[in-house]
Image 1: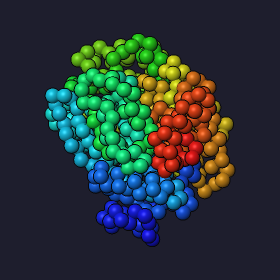
Image 2: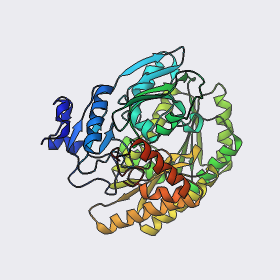
Image 3: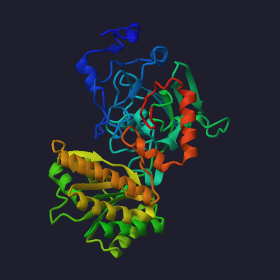
Image 4: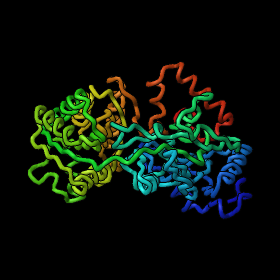
Length: 456
């Protein structure tokens, strides 16, 4: 198949149908991809290659969808018919780690775990720690402003992005941000691009802030007879202002699934209704976790275990990382991503239980209890239209519940295509108008990831 991109050369352009199909979507469900699919996959080796590709796309009005590891969960990398996929797989070098300025410069295809390892080699720390840290890319994390398990203390990806190199829709290469510790000149264009999901430009280089490496983390695990009791403990811990670097929750469905996948014995004495997993990486970690242990017992915890052994702590953390892979084994699934004020986590969890009962579906719940960001995972049978319809109703009900509780439709996965129609329910008309104006200014021909975030 001939395309306008052929002049980039066969090394950068793939039109083989099987290869193209493998790049056509991400991990999102609910029919966000389909049809004839993209025309080709572009695999640039440099910023100049990206600029040349976008100049051609702009000239011929060909939609471009940027794709990192394809691990996204919002449909942002689901390529529409007639588009081209721009893969960052070859833009995967750690360009610099500066221990004096405490920063690193990487290309977007660098795996997040590899950036963390590179920082650790010089005694520094890159905090963002999504569950997909072993395979998701830094570019994808920036595009969605990804969070992870350390957010309760350290914040999200955008809190660590200092500067970007970006190629605009017409092929113009520009830089935003700074390398200095301070800098407030002009509009904050870096923050505008973080979380834009490939709709405003293609990021080709990322400068991130690093921190001094923390000490070894101590770990607490508490089990509860009900989700409500676990949520009450979360509320008490939040009110107490304890210095935690992680506060995660898993419900019984998730714990059962993880146990079957890993054989860790999480339900050896009967699977609890919920488990909290907390860590503290401060010098006074023992005192913080002892205080949390008391609060958990007051909330009705059945068992509380404290561990300062790094190996044991890492094993427990791996159980949390396996939550989604374990739930995937139960059947077809749709992962929601909502965030509510921390004081309303109890209401969110109780509401999810009601939705599961009303739709007669299994919904496993896990997430970042410390910042109110939950990931209800709706298990269904994609071959059964009635089950698919029930899953869709459950997804809608949970997302609506988050908004009703004063929350947001996405805490870290992004809007993508999966939740595009929900954005206008969260933002007011003025904010929607500003968003459309920004999109029109930076991508006047609408070629950058059309249909993602905003309607095309």
